[in-house]
Length: 339
Ligand code: NDP
Ligand code: PYC
Image 1 (cartoon, protein in one colour):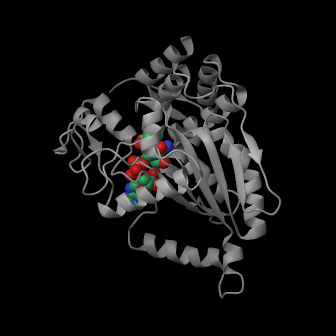
Image 2 (image 1 turned 90 degrees about the vertical axis):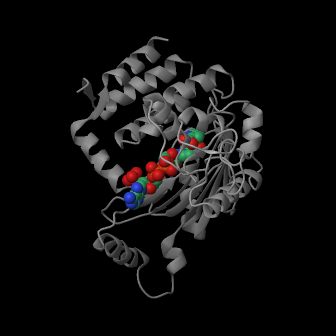
Image 3 (image 1 turned 180 degrees about the vertical axis):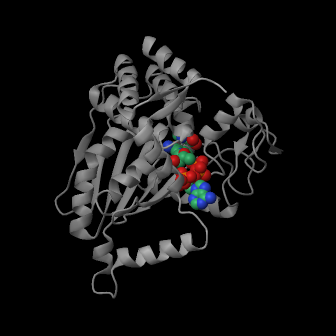
């Protein structure tokens, strides 16, 4: 068995933040990035944990994200739309800045949206969703990425892996959260298979000639496939429309044109919609949170599991025992800090 090291969550955060500070990120950017990356590692979401540090640093080095950006909040009296311009920095500090205003507007108006423009987004979306559920709100989060997914029936990359996430708050329990790519798998998973020298499961990708492949290299050169055929393809397209075109930001093909590569983190916008369940259910019979519990119990009662349950178990373990890293991962952190 390979050697492992256990780090506390705070010790891992310190290391990751130090790497970003050393690379020239200001404290707003470095702190928010370290929070989201360490949360991924803590929750055993390897495809968006410390593996993402190098991509973020490459993007800084290539001049495609501003390491010293300070996001700006734009609020209009009475409007349900809260805007944050990330000023060319990462999406995570922009979200942290916009969340309090978004929550306040959603509670006051019943629903509100946060639009983040001009940001680089490399992370999972559940941190945003959990920000909303932590405020007692339900929410939807989506963003494009870059053209790597063929539409159902097509044979060339066009849509992004376009993640889509939802959260519902639960009293005294972790929230109900799902968060997934609208491709069969996140691109990070293909890259992790390539690094491990493992074939992909069938049905994930096609090669440059449009033929099905299980070779990660051929998949990276070809296209990934949407999940659920025409259904995932349509949801991916909706995300291009709502979180790209509607918010006046880049679509996945435009992101790829702008970056010229998929080896850098994508630059685009993000849409976060928050709902107050109490406001929607007002005047109707039953408490929406109690009714939701009946539904969750019925799901679990059939032996099914709720999405994110695995993550919350991993989180509880990391919080009590620390985060387990392989020697290769510790070496990677040391190497990045020494750059
Ligand atoms: P997965 O297919 O691994 O999982 C998606 C969700 O489904 C999770 O909430 C997971 O919960 C849940 N789930 C998995 N198996 C089951 C099951 N048997 N029963 C119930 N729920 C289940 O996700 P993807 O590979 O598609 O995406 C991984 C991450 O990549 C996401 O966080 C996404 O946001 C991110 N991503 C980011 C992009 C970006 O541009 N920023 C682009 C694409 C993806 P659990 O975690 O508990 O297993
Ligand atoms: O895993 O597909 C992915 C991804 C793209 C951008 C960030 N993550």
